[in-house]
Length: 348
Ligand SMILES: *Cc1c(COP(=O)(O)O)cnc(C)c1O
Image 1 (cartoon, helix red, strand yellow):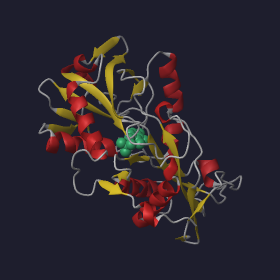
Image 2 (cartoon, helix red, strand yellow):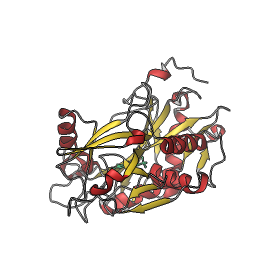
Image 3 (cartoon, helix red, strand yellow):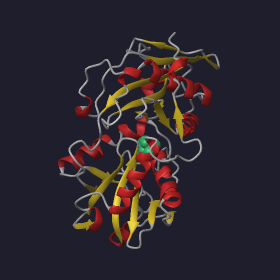
Image 4 (cartoon, helix red, strand yellow):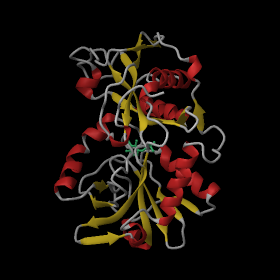
C-alpha cells in the first residue's frame, strides 16, 4: 500500500510536502466549489488580512491507518465545529461542516500513500486553516478568504520513550479575560513564542499559564490542556472560559468516566492545590497525553509523585484506552470514528 520509501519509524514532527492539498476561496459572500491542487504555495496580495492583521485560524487532526488497512479520522466533526467558533470570533466566514469534512476526507484520500502503515506509530497530520486573502489596510475584516487543508506525515510522539516534562509557571500571559484564548487563532501562538523561548532558555520544556486576572488559577500550556489526578484517582481538568477546548481532553474525560469508571471533575484548579495531585499530564492531538513530572513556580518545585519518572498509572490507562479506541481495538462511542472509503476517491 505504501509505495513511498519513507522511514516511518523515524519521522519527527516536521513539515514534509505531500502530493495534494485542498483549496477553496471565499468572495462575494460565498465559498467556491473547492478543489485539490498540487501547488503547495499560496500566492496572495501583499496587503492580505492574514499578513497585516493576523486574520487567520486553524485546526489540527490526524488520520490513522488500522490493521485492516483502512484509514480513519477521529471526531473530525468537532474540529469543524471548533473552526466555526474560531472563524466567528475572528470575523471570518464559516466553512460549513459538510464542506469541512469533505475537504479533509478528499485531502487525506488524495495523499493515502502518506498515511503511515499500521504499527509504525506514525500518523498523517491534517492541517485545515482559513485566512484573509484579499487586501485590507484600514483595520477591518478582509474581503476575501481562503480555506486550505494540507497533510504531512508525522512520527510517533514518544519515539525516544516517554520522558516526563518539566514545566515552569510563566510570567507571561497566554489569553486575556474575554480575549481569544478559547479559539484556535494563529495570533495566540505568535505571542506565545517569546514565552516559550524564555522557558527553553531556562531549561524547561513548556510553560504553565495562569489566569491573567488573579494569577492564582491554572489555565493550560501554549498548545495543550492539563489533566491532573488526585490521590484517590479522581481525574481533574481546569475549567476556564479562556482555555482552548481540546478535543483530546474532552475525549479523555469521557473515557475516564465511561470506560474506566473514574470520577471526573472540570473545575477551577488553583496553583496552591498542585501539591495535592499525584499525576499531571498534557493533552492534545500531537501526543494524546504526555506526562508532566514537575512544575517550577519561582523557588518552589512541585513534583507529581506518580508521573515524575514515567507516565502515571491513571494517565497510562487513559492513554491506552483512547489510542485503542482510535485504532479500532476496542469499541468507540457512537460517531467518534470516521472510516474513509477509499473507493470514492475524487481527484479534480
Ligand atoms: C490545539 C490546542 C490544544 C489541543 O487541542 P486538541 O483538539 O486536543 O488537539 C490545546 N491548547 C491549545 C492552545 C491549542 O491550540
